[in-house]
Each structure stands twice: as structure tokens, then as C-alpha cells.
Amino acid sequence: MKKFLFLINFICSASFIYAQLGINEFNCKRGFTDENGDDVDWIEIYNYSNNPVILSDFYLSDNPNNLDKWQFPAINLGSQELITICASGRENTKFPNHWEALVIPENNWKYWLGTSAPPNDWKLPGFNDQSWDIGQGGIGYGDNDDNTIISSVPSLFLRKEFQVLDLNDITQLLFHADYDDGFIAYLNGVEIMRSNNFNNFYPNYNELTNANHEAVLYNGGIPDHIFFNTEEIQELLV
Image (cartoon, rainbow, N blue to C red):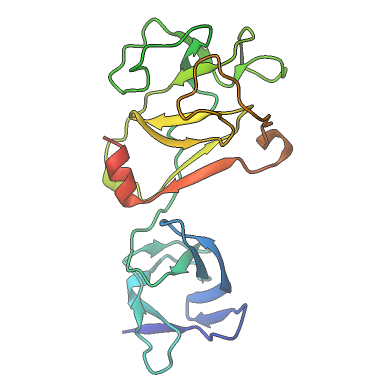
């Protein structure tokens, strides 16, 4: 039997319940960044029942003349759990059911002190970093909050290897950097993000940034970040 959740366009918050499921909240003024980095409208669906619900039995629509406009994918929504639906117009039914950290700051890192330049291929996955130092992140000096304290150097080069068993398990990838004062990040030798305070595209190991930047997480701030969609993940993670 088809079950419908009808969304009324001019209401900006609602709790419309059909048996187990309800529209808990929605935003018709965008405010949600989807997997493509676009700002889209969103609808929050909540399972009010005490049992899990297979969502493929339900349909979502904003048109009373077309109640089965969009069918939910075959996702098991647990009791008292919610799911956010992006009203982007794209038929992407992959659903991230949890986040996992591939790399965290407190991991052990291979590092090279910037008293000289590292080998040119240091950022490639096959690089031999056995001679590099090892330390727990964060690595730095002068802040009294570093797990690994180093001498005062103009730059620091960090390497961290990780493995993903099945790329199809990843629907989104988020990279963020909390830094002082600048950074350039590479993934498998490909630059994925940098701060905007370098004078040169390829800065020397002893070249300083042209502006200061303080870390923000310790003070409740949101660090610089970037999302990667499924296609980009397939290209970057090899």
C-alpha cells in the first residue's frame, strides 16, 4: 500500500504524521548544503513509532495531484530516528547513515621539520617516509596545547596514510583544517585545499604566509572545510 507525506509549500514548519512517520521540520529558504555543495531546501522526516520503518513504502510530494511524486529509497529508519531529505531535484538516493573519521588530529603522523625542503615526491602515496619523525598530533610549538612539541621552524610537512576497503561505502567526504598560520593539503598527490595567504603558488619551505591565521576549534569556531561528492571521491581515493 502506498503511503503519502504531503508537503504544503507555504508552511515553514510542520509536524504532519501518517501512522509512524511525520514531517518534523522543513526549510523552504534553502540552508542545507548537499553532496554537490549546493544550497538546497530540505525536509526532515521523523519516525515517531517504536518500531523501525522501511521508507520505500512512502512517497513525498508537494503536489496534491501527484501524491507519488517521489518515492523514498529502501532505507530502514529506526525508532525515534530522523532523516533529512534534500529538495535538490536530483535523483541521488545514496544515504549516509553515519560519519566515520578517516584521520583525526590525535593520530600519529610522520613529519619533516622545515629546516630544509623535503624530497619533491613527498606528497605521493608511494613515498618512503621511514626516515621521517613520528609524533602525535597536534604538532607544533609555542601554544602550550601541542601533543608533540617541535623546535621553531618556518614550515612543517605532515604525512598520514589510511585505507578505505570499499569506495562504494562512501557517499560524502569532508576535509577540514584547523591551522596556524597557513596550509596546503594533498590527497594522493593531488592538492585538495589551501589557505589563501601564500604569495606564491609553490611556496618554498622557508616562505612565510603574508597574513596570520589563528586556529578556531578551541574557541568554538568552525574550521575551513570542503565537501567532496561521490564522483570526486572515486577520482581522489585510489
